[in-house]
Length: 149
Image (tube, rainbow, N blue to C red; front, side):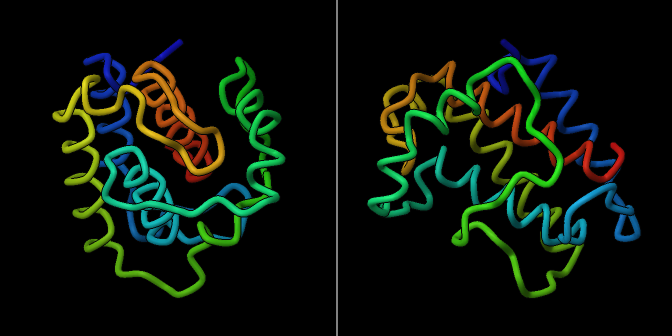
């Protein structure tokens, strides 16, 4: 399983982020490139502990099924629904979002596996560092493909 805690995997994702441009066209979905970067940063901030989400009853109920999909081998499907708290409705400044995303990305990796180990995910509960590294890689991969990078 790829993980952002593996140097070559982390470098690959970072190079893809850097390739994003304000006019990068989405292949599916509704978000602009700037909104997508705000979205993946928000989710990444759950992994760093900078953000927390209180799980709803439905999130708790769906947690095991969602974890199976997220931790599975198959890529996420195009157009997969996004949780309401993670939808970026307002337009974002591309350069600001890119800079903030890269900073948060570096912090997640620099914090390392010890900081991620056992951190609670609002839907999936406590995750191992390997699960955090893989789930973040899979999320980034999905959205970068969404913008052709």
